[in-house]
Image (cartoon, rainbow, N blue to C red; front, side, top):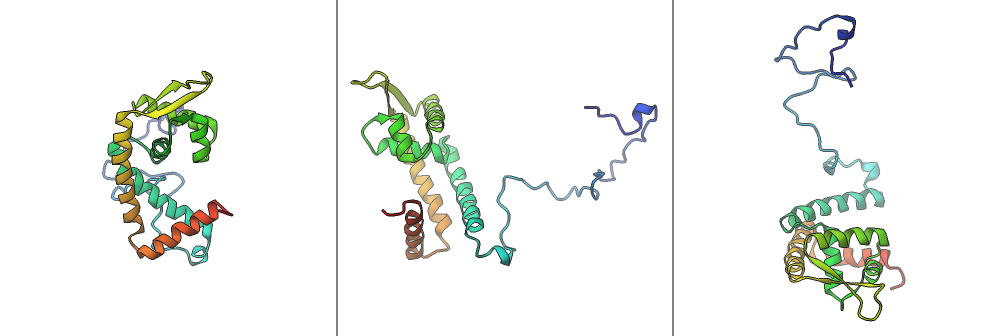
Length: 189
């Protein structure tokens, strides 16, 4: 892609840009140097929530999840794991060493996703694979000591982030919210 100024190909030279003049976008007004560009991954400010969306469950759940995910990511950053990786560690810690497939079923993720998560955790030294004693075709996944330690400390940080997220609710309302969500994702249980 050419970085030449318009008209430069025709032999015309554009005058040097005035450093006091903000750059302009041909599709819009001059850029404001005082306002940093918005982070497209950041959740929007909901202070001005459009009233027509205030009762839309999908909209509310999405933005609640984005807010919780942001707090959780910040809390887990010092431990070098993501929320999904912490979920894998938690499931593996809560059972006898099992197969990757069993852990994937418990988490509700597909096999390919699980392989990637376990690979990442293995690369970090948090889990190890070993051949199943009775079926060499199956791998058993288990936490390492570092994995157990990371899981405990990261779990504590994640729970703290959840408490901060739920702070606007009473303990009773927070409990009702969790119960309602469980009912929605596990109907009939």
